[in-house]
Amino acid sequence: MAGVPAARKRVLFLFSDTGGGHRSATLALIEALGLEYPGVFDCKMVDVFRDYLPAPLRYAPEMYPPMTKFPETWAISYKATDGKRRSRAVIRALFPYVARAIRRLYRENPADIIVSVHPLVNTGVLRTMKSNPTPFMTVVTDMVTTHAFWFDRRADLVVVPTKEAREVAVEYGIPEGNVRVVGLPVAERFRVPPADPMAFRDEQGWRRDLPVILVVGGGDGMGPMEAVVKSINEARLKATVVAICGRNESLQHRLKSLSWNMPHHIYGFTTQMPEFMAAADMLVTKAGPGTISEGFIAGLPLVLYSRLPGQEDGNVAYVVKKKAGVWAPRPHQVVDAVRRWVEDPEALAAAAKASSKVAKPDAARQIAQIIADRAGVYSAPLGSN
Ligand code: UDP
Image (cartoon, helix red, strand yellow):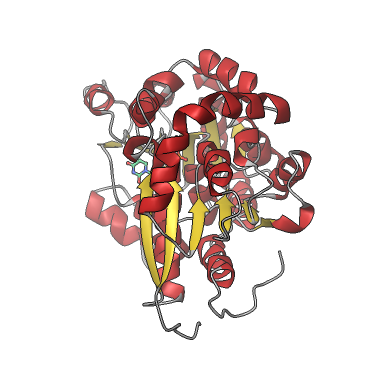
């Protein structure tokens, strides 16, 4: 625990609501700072795109969900801008257009430390700051395939979730000594699971005697989730299907009116993801980094049914390599995978164990300690990274 400094330290978090992951990672860090160092930090979150950048960039959070509906187009723009030279060329072209907005952002939000949780703000801010001594940290929220935009060598420190991501950081020019492998920051509620998951099943009316297949599609119920749920239902497995549609209300409606052959429960956006995961036996999801990391912490074997080409490719490879789950891009492959686990509890237990093994439940708290250290607050020595 920290000694309380004379004045509270100001932490400025730069993020944007392009997908759900950047906000939830930022909130997890703010929560962890509060838990590790009560009363020491004043944290402020700024959605750089929405709050500061000129149109059309300001609409990035609104444009993101429709853009990612066309994975192949997404892949082209991802690849076209990835790589040291290409990413620099894009930033150089955009910089005159955003420079004034970033100077204003910087002026209006004085801080003792800046923490970026978004790939697209690093170079713009660091270039504007120039010789300013405010420490700048980047917390990367993609697991393995991390876009070149994340990495600017002027950052004082870059925190990444995996060793694989560290290699990418170094390849893109970050000095090895400035990269730390910690994990993806996840909310405290995942770290401390509910004492009695069966009580949650009772509360929700789920059967105790059947395995629960939890199906999710990110915060917006994206990807081919409907086809996946339909195929599982047609397979008539001895299991309960729990589908979380996020903010996708029409999907929720369609799944509720399906002709059901299996026990099922359909939900919209929930704030109880830790409880849902703790009470489930397997997780069928798109390859979002947040959901995957939360699934690891809950010890859930994963079936990944879709991924965003480029940034989520590595997540799939990572899960498969660690034997924590399978890649099943077609609905019948999802059915094969869940059927195997429903019918073979030993195989299910082995995958669950592999999933738990790669979990990093303390990541948010460890990153909070690094932030404190960089902000000049005394902190306990960290475990080795
Ligand atoms: N989530 C949630 N409630 C829901 C659906 C999703 O809290 O009903 C959370 C989920 O637990 C995860 C985040 O939304 O933390 C989704 O992040 P991920 O990186 O998996 O996907 P994204 O939505 O960013 O593409």
